[in-house]
Image (cartoon, rainbow, N blue to C red; front, side):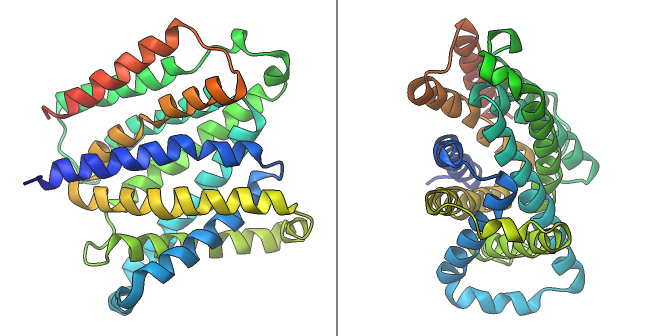
Length: 293
C-alpha cells in the first residue's frame, strides 16, 4: 500500500507535468498576463466549485483567522504571483524566464523552517539545492538569446523574480491551511480570494476596461490555463502539501522547468546546449535524494 509521503510525491509529479505543459496556451496568448490572470482564476474557481459538491458546506466552519489566511494565500499566490509569471513568460524566452522561478524552492525551504512546518535536515537542503541548480542549468545564459529575446529579457527576468517571491510566500502559507477542508474546496477558496483581490486592483487601476477588448482566442488560451493549471494541478498540489508539507512537495514540482524547456525546444525552436542535459541530471538526482530524507 502506498504511504502518504509517496502519494504526495506522485501527486506533485503529476502537477509538475501539467505545469510544464501549460506554458503552451500562455505563450500563444497575446493579451497581457495581468488581464489573462482574471480569466484563469474565474475559470478555475467555477471548476472547483462544481467539483466541490457538498464539501462547500465545510467552509462555514472557517474562523476569521482561517478566512484571512485564505485571502492572503490566494492574493499572493494567484493575483500577484501568477500574474507576474504570465508576464515573464510572455515577455521573454521560456528557457530563460521559467527556470529562474526555481529560486522559490530555497525560499520555501527556509520559510517553512521558520514557521515550524519542516525540521531542518541537511539532506533535504541538499535535494532542494540540486533541483534549484538543475532548474537554473536547464535555462540558457543571456548571451545565447536571440535579438528578439534580448529586447524583453530584463523585464522578463524582473517579473520572474517577482513571481517566485510571491509564490514562495503563498506556497508556504498553503502548509498552514486547515486540513479539514478538502483540497478541491480549499483550492476553490484560494482562487476565489485571488480573483476578488485582482478585481479590487483592476477597479483601482482601470485594467477592467481592457478586458472588453480581449480577443476570443486569448480568452480560450487563458481558460485552458485555468482548467489545467489552476484547477487540476493546484488541486493536486494542495492535496500533496496536506500530506507531506511545502518543502518536499515544492522540490518535486520544481522539476517542471525541464518540461517547459523541452516544450520551448520542440515547439518554438529555442536553442539548447549541454547545460540542458546537466540540468536535467541535477534535477533527477535531487528528486532521488529526496527519497532518502
